[in-house]
Length: 472
Image 1: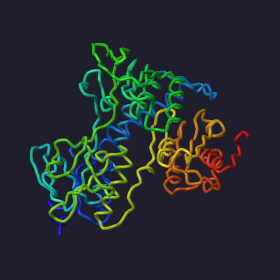
Image 2: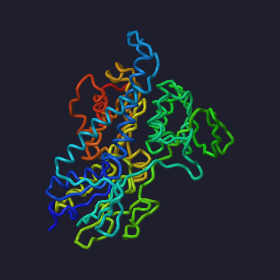
Image 3: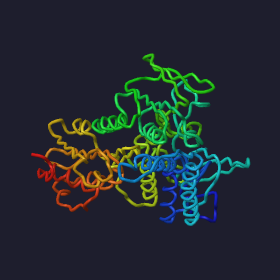
């Protein structure tokens, strides 16, 4: 029986210490299992160090800059004197450092063995670790959980370096660029575009698909495009990148159409790839498709270990939404299965999604187009409740709406929001969609006034056929 007394053998060996990996380790240890967590860089992974947390810190600094710029509209005499990027970076780094210290303490308190080094899957149930000091070790697990995360992708032939950056390098810039071309209008691209515009840069987005945030409901994409135009953020849609030329003072970006843009920097934000190459996965029998680990709905890879366990996979290496909270939930789910519990499989459609640009975009469930495909166009009802009728939104000076998608005479299957701070509302949306609530169920709930949350109550009242504030 594996015990902590034999540090080379564990119930669970987790390869990767990001959101999915450390959640697996924490929950497994909580359930009484012996756990080793292998991480070559820092606990917390992409999300904590070069992803969710530091980018949202920059977005908050951008919100403060916008508040200073536009204080006069609220009767407050403020002005933006400039952006102290070293100060912004220090603020960002202090947020990350505090959370990192807390995570380290939490992992240590659960008596999880942390192995610092590069881990590879040497065989089913065996992880080999090469440490920075040149030593190596082998950890054996009854179960192995693959959680090696993702990396910032580029395009074929587009090399990163010099004035061509990914989000990793963008997070360390100690000056505000005068101008930037952002290649990619998805979540990462629009968030950085939003930050840089608030900091005073000239921003041009290039997106190959027909809309910004193209995975969202079309109504949200179009509304974000209107808001970005109003902010002065430029974008080209349906345009494919051709090449970039660097000089001492900038870049010239050329599109396949022949259009060119000159800027100080090019940010490549074309998505994230799964970190699975050269880690021994395929040699151990793990199936890989386009870099991603294939699993069943229980996140099993189908590869057994000699000790009677399984190889599992969680997080960004599993096809689907690349979100930290998805990986976190998957880690808990896998740990509970290993411990002999029977948790319900995760419903991917009920995972909330937030893009933290200004205005924010938040959604859960299926889009109108997705619902029409699932249930048939004549079996779908939608409604948009404009935030212009919401008192708190009026106070904040934000514009946007809440769009609901329901099955005809059935539950709400999608919620789509745009406006300042709407990311804070999507928690209720997750409950509504996840618990298959009917509009009438939500319409009877009392929402606090004045809050933006109240808009969700009004939207459901309207969808239930009793729109109190709608014009007849």
